[in-house]
Length: 206
Image (cartoon, rainbow, N blue to C red):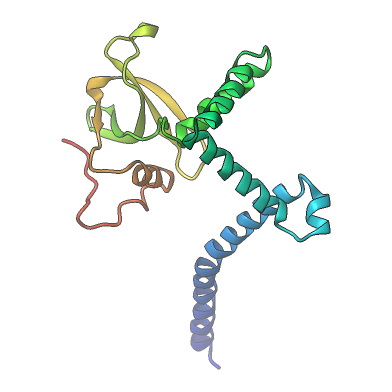
């Protein structure tokens, strides 16, 4: 085999290897994350999983959480019990700060009162005009001395983090034709995912 054919073969093998990583990588990472979550919950009560079978603790926790959510949402007695515990934890010294903070963060992402549900564009520079995608979190900041301002959460790409900015309401553009899930996927992926439809082309306002 001459040098040219050897290099072509080597190049093909390298390309095939990386193509295989693209196929296997996301699949393997997804399976690993699911297994890590299940095994972590199982390790909370290892005696149950060891005596019965792996995953039983996870299924129990999942089922119990779903049942509590259903009872707390559909039945008056369940709602009263949930509200009572909520009131108790929010008024217990020391615990209330931890509980309230965690509750605010979780309700921002899920539930009927989730906050990251209004995607917007925020103008960061005027000339040239540069826009960043984010989520409107507060529509009025007059109470903290910023009348005419709003707060916007700007997620970081490829990271579970972000930052909040105060900006004049005139410097944001509401994205009514984009869902919150699409906007978050677009922002977190660095703009390479989230707007796949040719009929829904993402354009910054002029």
